Amino acid sequence: MARRYFGTDGVRGVVGESLTPELVEKLGRAATLWSDGGRVFIGRDTRGSGPDLEQAFARGVVAVGGNAVLAGVLPTPAVALLALDLGAVISASHNPPEYNGVKLFDSEGQKLTDVAEERIEALLDARFHGRRGEIDHVGVATDSYLEHIVERFGSDLSGLRIVVDCANGAYSGIAPEAFERLGAEVTAIGSEPDGSNINVGCGATDLRTLRQTVTKSGADLGVAFDGDGDRMLAVDARGEIVDGDQILAILMLHLEVELVAVTVMTNMGLLRLAQEHGIRVVTTDVGDRYVLEALRREGGLLGGEQSGHIIYLRDHVTGDGLAAALLLCGALEGRTLAEAAAVMPRYPQARADIRVSRHEITPAIAEEVASVNVALDGKGRVLVRPSGTEPVIRILTEAESPAQAKETCDIITALVRRELG
Image (cartoon, rainbow, N blue to C red):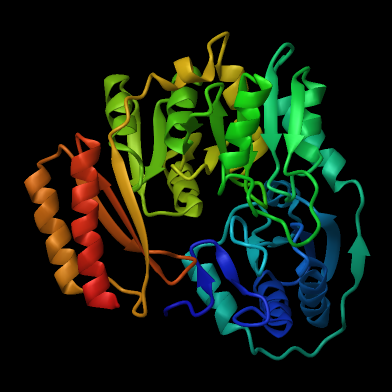
């Protein structure tokens, strides 16, 4: 059965349009029924719509006999770590402020499978006859989470000068404190949320301010999170971006893992580096939950996405932007970030995101992509896929030169526009 509301990472939409308090309340009811009641731990990011939607979800929980435990503003990975019988986050992650959504975790802090999400959707209009639950509030969740991350993933960062961009999101105040506890000299930006500025001109989706701040302040590096804290990107002292693939490359060598899980979007340079070091690569569809599923299936610890979802399952249950940033700093071992990132030669890439009226890959597009990939003969590739969170077709091309990557991307982009409008 196709999912109507759930996408790549939970349910998302523009508040008041595709995402309403009524739908969120139904999701609270259905998810609680699916998990057989019990206690539901609920966090949210800093969007202005968050408190109302948090209350809507909690109403759904208690309506079917569950107990809702409200933690307030809390990063998504913290909710995964602290999940009770169920964990829920009211967040739209990296999307603009007008969006919001619901992410769900099971009792072990794992993202739900496609099958579980289908079952929850089937329960959206289910009736319940029983006693109502209760709503509780908890105020120590942030401290518990921060202590866990600093203790398990931190190292001595004395002398490190770092700029920390919190995206005006859930890591505001929390992430800078973690680095300060470990001895770093911290400049915090994007750490003054007002409900309407999450991910706006800051954070992992817009690195311009971070790059400028790092170069002007003479910092050693900068790190940026997205609004709910499950992804992280970095910039070196020159202001050059270090993406998720490069971070994975640094970590997989430093942590000496035998396996790394990545997605189809991963740069070919990472695949070649892993091959050279005898590290087995498992490739999944786009979405950090698919990377997580692969790691658990294969018994691996490290994986991630180019977009900055970095997962390390020693002492954790999911991807965590702050944990990844601390691991990255610990992996430098006296090197600059630029020197550390140089271990992975990157294939030039070109990308395009095309808004479309028909959210599908037509036979003509599929045939052209297959033909181009055959012609590239392993020296590049083309990937075309529908976004799991927006009405967009995403195009990625790789080649041995930037010009060839761009030319190929332009050809495929024109075809997608003709086919899908």
